[in-house]
Length: 162
Image (cartoon, rainbow, N blue to C red):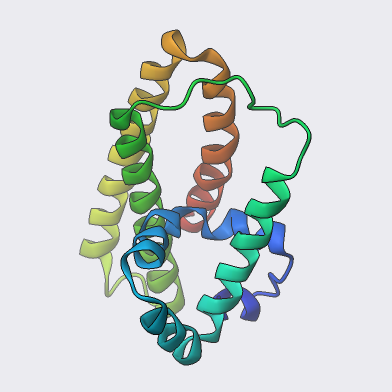
């Protein structure tokens, strides 16, 4: 959240898009900690509280809509949920990695790690394509939403990978 603030990303909608890759890990924290631990996290990391509040407000707004474009779309199977979560986690890893190397200013020093990140990026794209292929026949409407959600991540990571 601090990094997004430094980049001038303050709009809740933009924050949600930029933090999408972190959602599975943040969800684990949210559901796997006590209220006291969450209060301590929020106190130590004000950005965590702000993100949680943004997500809570977005979730409430979504619940209160009369209709949503994805109404009627079958829920993902457990396998698809796990694949989507892993793709999001890997996307976050790629974003953090590329940002760290770009921030260092000297990519030559980290060329081996940058090459490994490139390999992970190519594997992630292949895994994403496989995931989409598995949805193509079973849930064509769900594929539209996956394309939209992951499309933002693909573009952002591509830009960071330069």
